[in-house]
Length: 65
Image (cartoon, rainbow, N blue to C red):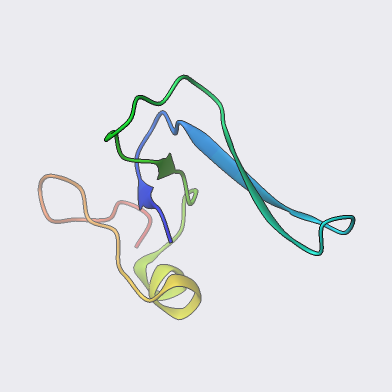
């Protein structure tokens, strides 16, 4: 699992050839920097059900709820 942020600096996909998931940087990521993905616009029920966390903004809310 990656931390979520926009803009994200990486993305992932499944490779049939490698039989596993590939993570690729979409921007330069310096050593020690976090890798961020973006999980999209979802309500907290979907975040929790699919990823095991909820997503809140700086005001403690999720506008998609």
